[in-house]
Amino acid sequence: MVRGGWEGHRPVEATEMFLPFLEDSGYAVRVEESTEVYADADEMARTDLVVQCVTMSEITAEELAGLIAAVEAGTGFTGWHGGIADSFRASSDYLHLVGGQFATHPGKEPCERQGGQEDNYLPYTVNITALGREHPITAGVEDFDLVTEQYWVLHDDLVDVLATTTHPVRPWHPWHRPVTSPAIWTRQWGAGRIVVTTPGHGLDVLEHPSVRTIITRGMTWATRTVSE
Image (cartoon, rainbow, N blue to C red; front, side, top):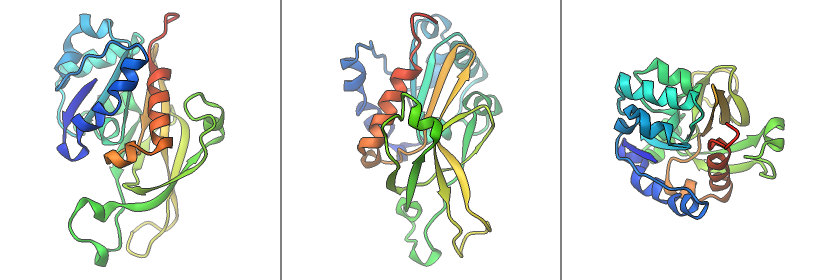
């Protein structure tokens, strides 16, 4: 479990929420407060799953190369919200690994904004795709509604989208038709599995039953298996 970066996403408190699940599921959990561990080839080779919660921040070339090599060799990689989808903005190689990058979270009407994070909290729906209704991570999860940051994501075609969210047209925004972004996706990278869940801005969102189910199932699904 690797955490750090922007404190607004509460990386310590957010990751602590999932430690009991991992330990109860039989994982031996190592918590790291920086990405330095990614450059430790021996440790990464022994790691079956990386849960990352590092928003923005920076990563060295050696650390990123170690993470990529580990995933290609079968280490699973997962996380939520900015901790995985808005990490290391200066690194195109990280973006290439993950397959999608936070671009923005549209905000409220300007006259309603008060200067806090709540300015970007909007009601929206997470829609499970046809693939998602059959996938182990999201099977049985119905479409659900949230009031929080709605991520607009730039992505490529190598992601398998399990859920989407649609940004509507509002008078104060410059786009002219609804825009649909992936909200939950998986990605196969070498022998490794990647899972990205974009909801998760606050602890209350991580406590939402559907969000928590998806994140914990994603951890299990992404984990390296014996057959790999």
